[in-house]
Image 1 (cartoon, rainbow, N blue to C red):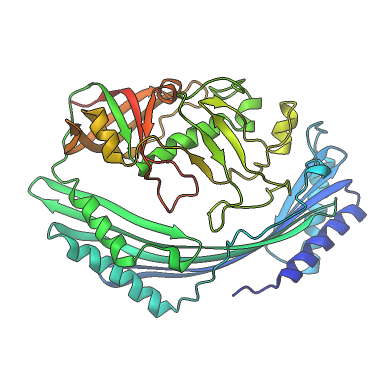
Image 2 (image 1 turned 180 degrees about the horizontal axis):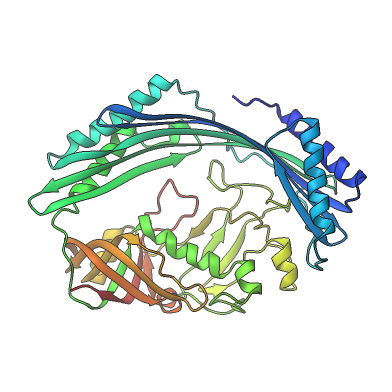
Length: 442
């Protein structure tokens, strides 16, 4: 599968670190990675695209005192590697000293690196990939007579491995896989045309949803949008479907992340210990879950990851920090260099239908458009589509609307969450109910 053995990547990483130290670096860290994969796309049962991907990269970061330099190469030859190390050192020598720069603290390095069951190779012959994509699309086209066109179906396999090491002597190898099947179709009737899609992603082939089921789901989602209309402008309760509620969690993560906090470019600056969400909300970070898409025993700086509570009863219990932002804030890294690791939010209701019944009348959002979110003020305004809910039941599809509020008010106004988080998502958050938002329609 891979073109390099794990020991080859480890040896390369060690030699790069040794060379950096010999040539004048006071500290260094390196990341050596390789990925291979295949992507097949069909449309109307004809092959549109076949891609084979093979990438490799060496990234070296050096510190001369507390001046930082970074360089990278895709060429693993001895000469190219030596030039890359020199380029990083040259950058560092012309860079100002920064008292917060440097490796993460040595005592925080991961010592026990367990198995997250992340690597499940899928050796998929191209012809079989084509057949799988065709069957996915065929299931969608046959699922409903109103499906009039297809934007295609695709099957993708990805495998990667990397080694991270630093001048403390930390050296660790990790490999993983990520496979996906997707489909997008167009439905049409006398009211017009609507498109929608569905997909699944998993570490292992056997964890993927059946391909035909993905096609059928795409067709059903497109057909149910037919006859969509706008609704009168007003203030309404809103349920964010599980397919879009993750964006709210993303805004929370962004506002609690070190870079935004130390720059004071977040509406949640100095929020540690303060209630910023409804009192029932708890969010945990669980980085060691088997087969989860963001599991790891060490972050991008080699720091050991741990289960932790980020939101406790609506109160901020922790930020998302790498070593640099932590030092800027006078704090300790939370092992989030490189991102977050499997966030899980609790639920209050068994299903979305229970949320809708309790809400009574309001808006169910299934699609969001645009980027109208201000991370500094919390102002929120995005295009949306979904369904109008009347007496706890979906009444008709809705489109051409804009929903607006402030994230501060939305978070505190959370009324509940359903136990319907998407299997394909690393961060688990189900459909969520916000007490009210301004909806601009007719």
